[in-house]
Length: 610
Image 1 (cartoon, rainbow, N blue to C red):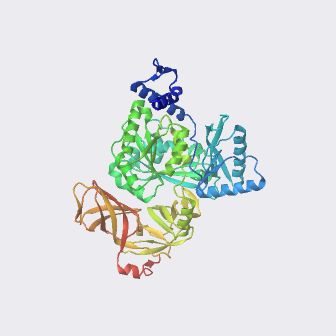
Image 2 (cartoon, rainbow, N blue to C red):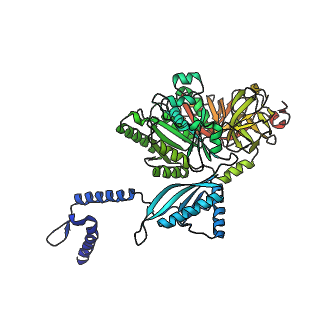
Image 3 (cartoon, rainbow, N blue to C red):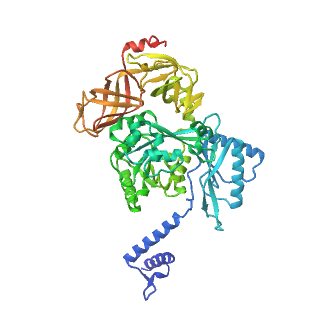
């Protein structure tokens, strides 16, 4: 009995400081506390604790430092010796190489991730050393944020700093990220891009988007029907470089260390095939889904979100037009988005960005985890929160590291043809993305397959990247190539330009493991669908379903497809998306069935001089 009393009083003594003088005692001095008040106070205490942690205080640990990657932890960099300084500069060079021209330094952090923090004087000296190191390797530094930690015994205020190190541009080797812009018609996609890239706010009637339209009917209706590209640059100090101050595209490229290429896609359901082509062909690194605050999730919004997720493109959300509606309406739209993102089909973690600190955290977590989905609430008219989006885009790291990039560049040249133009005084020009290898001016390649399954010889003239001349094109970069007097009628979208040393596999029939996302009835042998694989877009017939007679919504199977019109060049493992009306499915290519034995045996005879 005595033990029980002891333990009870022990618990009481532990609780008393937490609850303070508001506790009441009985005649024996024991605390009496009803269940209700206990739960209330528990909640209040919890609220107090969460308030404390919401201050700009950092958590006591970061993940341990990784050997590879572009993030470096440094406890302090105060007056290093010359030998130590040279070693630190070499280390910075390595981190910049790993991040393809960008690195993040955490100052005041041990290698195991413990946040120790530095005094004001030590922090100033460390940042000064870091600036000297950056100058040595041809880079600039930008202080992203400082956070307080006070875990020492004296409870002195100590800080940790997060610093972005970025290479000064040289020889056009800026970091290029592609962002596909999705969203329902009239959600404000083109207007937002116009404001970001032109540097001027919109007048509320769509003036900012006029420079983005390519056709007269787009200007008349205000609706995008084609794919257009817009560029936004950031210099080595993290400042925005756009068309403001009457800059040309060439000047933007010259003064930028990092380039964001926005792929403006169509929102109207009528142009869905164009939107899918933009997502599959241009290989975007990220997708920005624009949702209008006053209408919420309507029209093609869910469809575009589903397409990005099916193609495994990381997505972030911009809620536009917040100047048009009340705060409660904006909050309702954000809650609606959070509900959709948390659904079992999505399994995303929404993260509302409300401050520059949130934007930095969102950019880093977004690149590390595909489940994080940042949400921005902004206005193209008032300019509200546009700076937060710019901070996010400035810090957003590339998805592939330098090693993967090097491996792709070692492979044979392969360029996807997405657009074909005829330019006066230049001749035939093709636009697209270099999937692998390196392409130089004057290089000899072969292009195909033609309707007969042939590849034709050609020579690359000049190369332009982001509307400025470029001598060398590297894997993953988008560009336009001039082909001189090559006959335009022999080219079509979906072709590839490859090295003559490559023996490209062309096929009329192929097998793919698919999942049927939706079908009104059943998918069976003989069904015709439009197949999208990379830059290939063609109608195909399902010749057979392995082990099944028919497929219903949600079912999986290996299906043999046959292209209706002409053979295509496909890669094993390539992502596949097919549709027809409301029918939709995704999958990947598992087996290529060559067009005919003739094509395999007589590859050299198929190369025809032009």
